[in-house]
Image: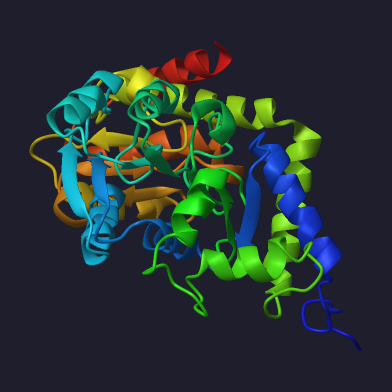
Amino acid sequence: MTNPFLDLAPLSADRFASIEDRVARLLATEQDVVIMQGEALLPLEGAIRGTAGPGTTALNVITGPYGQTFGNWLRDCGATVYDLSVPYHTAVTADQVREAFAEHPEIDFVSLVHAEAATGNTNPVAEIGEAVAEQGALFYLDAVASVGAEPVLPDAWGVDLCVIGAQKAMGGPAGVSAVSVSERAWARMAANPHAPRRSYLSLLDWKERWLDGGRKALLHAPAQLEMLALEACLERIETAGLDAVMDRHRRAAAATRAGARVLGAGLEPYVHQASEAAPVATTLRAPSDVDASELVARALETGPALPLAAGGGPLAKEMIRVNHYGPDATQDVVDAALTALAAALTGNGSTVDVEAARQAAAKAWQR
């Protein structure tokens, strides 16, 4: 008996290219799109190492842990890096970016995370893109968490390197990712003697051996299951409509914030302003006398499949994440998460009003 997951015909170059074209349509981009055979850290690192070097002066925006990682990569490449850090409960502004440019007019590279699922904030990329265009800098964007939850428009926003992954709001696999690359970014890579070549990190290898060759011969055997899963994920989004998928995420975020505000016991949204809160995931600040990681552990005892997690690293004691993305961007999941948190808080001796929380969440979902 054949196994449909093991006895797969090789994925053809034409089909691989057609999946890239569907990613390009998702991003409404005319730029080159390269699907890379690995989790999104692969193109995130490859894009930085391809375009940055000892002559680069970078503005690295930090609104969460990934921004810190990008700064480390840039420094490792020999770039001069100026970090622009803002508190995790807020977003960066275009004015702050312009102020950094005024202080360091030599900046020629900007790295930014669109939405930080780890901290629950989202940044105004369209406005920041205008500032970056005025500066003439290369614009690198991590849209791994935001794609599918909110608009991601690299062409309209002037983004030169836009990296996405399918494992969050798109509801797809983690083992493949993609990056859109502008002509400016390709030129920067071609002129960079430190850009990886003959390497799994190399975007130039894909350009020279795949794109420039008319997408006729793949560099290596693709990961078939992940590519087919990505194709199915894109088809599902196309069938439902991207606007409808994004709307589910917006509703889930609004419902979670509304429910948390009235649940009681001091639970509150971590990101202060709703306009700065990411639709992909909502972070909550645990009550001051409660350890967030312990609270999440108790909540998961009521439903281990719930999309709840404590914050990472130093945030583990104070932050709760409700990861309402992909198939979990539903009213039922939000309701179940609030109910589980209520049970955990009650078990901790707190007084909560779970029915009021459910009603507030339902009302916010319907708005």
